[in-house]
Length: 386
Ligand SMILES: *[C@@H]1O[C@H](CO)[C@@H](O)[C@H](O)[C@H]1NC(C)=O
Ligand SMILES: *[C@@H]1O[C@H](CO)[C@@H](O)[C@H](O)[C@H]1NC(C)=O
Image (cartoon, rainbow, N blue to C red):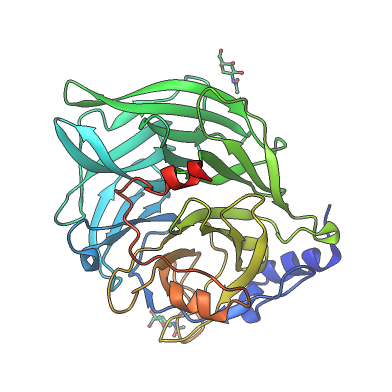
């Protein structure tokens, strides 16, 4: 179904005017935030970021972004000030995620993982512990089935079994769940589940909740769905929120990237979703039934231009440095707009201080700056006692 104001929106989009004013609609009233930093040029067709947290010195954490153009596509690595640190050519990586503490060669290493569209592979790199830069790793390219065309992806480490998984989807709503492990100092993958998700529409963004064992996926023109992330579970979806704003939905297509802000317990935290149709971002409670809380939009300021048509995003709750002491949100910006009004060919990514997100929301948001992605959730036992 297309709503009247949505066709008006797409009309504006054709004219390149969507960013002229933040748009509110039934169900959402975005509040405004100015980003603090932006990256340098991040490729012609950027899409999705991931944030890697440095184990010893969070101020040396990095942002990894995908650029999915045919030629010159790959992964960019940026520092917390937005400075480019590295570019690694790759075959149209779509969505990137970080895997922490992966058992490899009697060590625990961190990995960057994406689905590469040029050769329909699961593509992985080792993240250097000290520099955050990407390095090749044996077995870093894993084939998908012959009839499969890869698109989005996200990682899931099961708190139940400790096993590491990656979900990869096709545009036609089919999901592959791979278990990733090491054998003879080489990465290997095993297909453990294959299922259809959503209502058959195009899917891309996804994020897993490792403590609760959930997989959230975005069906671009329909809504956000939730599935059990364990490989043996029935693939039965629950619709978390929809684009049906006339009937209580809070989304405007496309539903794009999503990421999880981990709170202190497995009930605390937030799901952040890119609502591309109105250049805004929705916040939901992490705990079921994932109540909608608020919507914000990003406006120009701090010498940073407007942010439009966000595909991917990534959020962490960890305090990283003085500028981002209580979490960081990184969002894709379709194109940079120069002060003279012309649009750059290159994508950039914008960095948002999570305190600004918490301050502006009319709902109280709880921060968790001590979050350590390498630590298991130690509230598990308390929860079971209740
Ligand atoms: C691909 O092949 C598998 C196994 O033969 C089959 O179950 C699946 O439906 C096929 N998918 C497509 C998109 O053709
Ligand atoms: C606008 O500014 C950008 C960046 O400074 C510059 O590269 C571009 O040539 C300018 N375009 C015009 C039409 O002035």
